[in-house]
Image: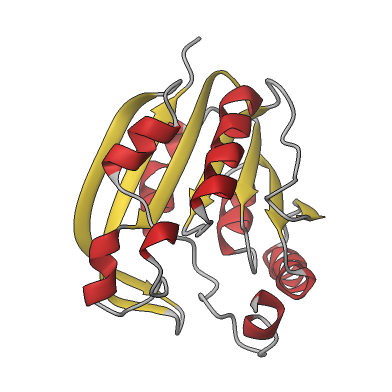
Length: 196
């Protein structure tokens, strides 16, 4: 599905970074950052522009080729990894920050990934996330139709018990990111810190 979505010449979710990320990236300590389900590169490229050592991981080689092209066009470098998040190893105490922007995963895969996130963050490292909540279904402005792929503040607390959340909010906001995320969206936003 994702190779097909990313095969068009235009960028499916645009080339500009997610606005929650741009408003809050400074919470992430400078250093190594991993961006999950990076797609066509817009968020990893932004982080590279801010001076982070960024790795973007995605299951679509088509998306990652466009990500590299976007990075080249902006004069920055990032590391691109083609992998399935179901079996991608994040390492131990390896990352100053991990970013998840609209990364819809089935619950079993998501929960296993989040256990890896907790282990992979360095002490003091930050997990930054924006995801659609089940209320998004009524808007129909992106995110698909599967409630189980969506998140809530309660699910994030339950699935990331090792983080101290400095920001955890459900809200509605205009999401304008390419042709697939456009309009009023119901989202959850989270910034969690791994205790030092």
